[in-house]
Image (tube, rainbow, N blue to C red):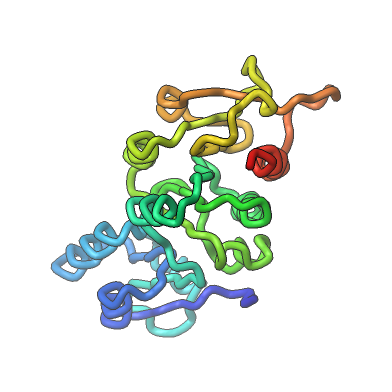
Length: 244
């Protein structure tokens, strides 16, 4: 695995990369630059669900020593897919979809570890948010032991719309909560499910929680308040994998 993500520098090279659907994780644009170029760059990023970060010139200089012309595109090995396209494909294959949704998880180590367990236990796709989701950078890919290159990663513009799409396609949304009455052993994992995981500390966001169909908890005997989210994910994925 590479330890450094590829960087595309310069106004024309970045535009060409975006227009030709090159795998780009995010674009960084120098603060204070205005005009037609900025408008086109924002439009391209928005149309491809690519985060655009406005940053000081000094930060660009630290990332790239050459002439960056005020814009850098950070590449990725992961080719993001659309949930709208992935779901029909799963049903066409006769599969019962098992999806994991990461709600507000930004730590790339947790992202990579979750992806690794997801691929091992047969989860069909990972859904993240373009606004506040972890980057599928080289570190995340390395932490996942390459799993992020083998499992569809759907980076969606709106988490609310993604959850709505899942429900429209007959998928039950299941979240985890320490106060839930049901344990993971009482969930019907044979049905199409989306396992929704929230960030450590903050947990599942309030807007997401409102649309969940069920909440469950991992049975615990110790006094530690909760598990690391990637560890919890592995346990839930294992339980779901037993329902065949």
